[in-house]
Amino acid sequence: MKLKDCDMLKLEKAFFRNLQRNNAEYGQIGLDCKRPFGNSNVEQDILEIIGAKMRGDDGDGPCWSSHQIEYASAMYDGLIAWLWKRHA
Image (cartoon, helix red, strand yellow):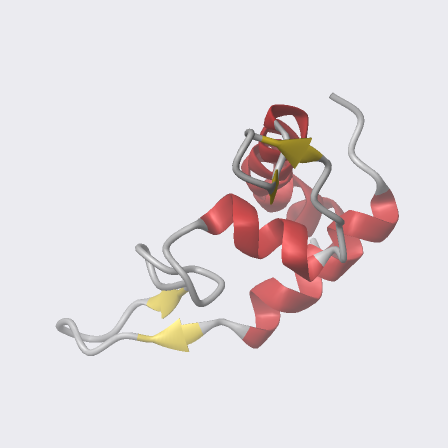
């Protein structure tokens, strides 16, 4: 799946904004493992970060389409490689 650079830049900024140091032992630096961008629905958070508009309709109203969820998941999966390429 082709990821848009402009979307990855927005996710990169969100990544750095959400870095934290936890209190376990010495303290790991990273994202909250359950809520990396604030909520437990990571794909929804990513879609909101990139400014996506809901394109699905589950019969109950607007919602994120399966393609949008897959795209957001691919963005998160590709984040480490993206950051490495840009900051190594």
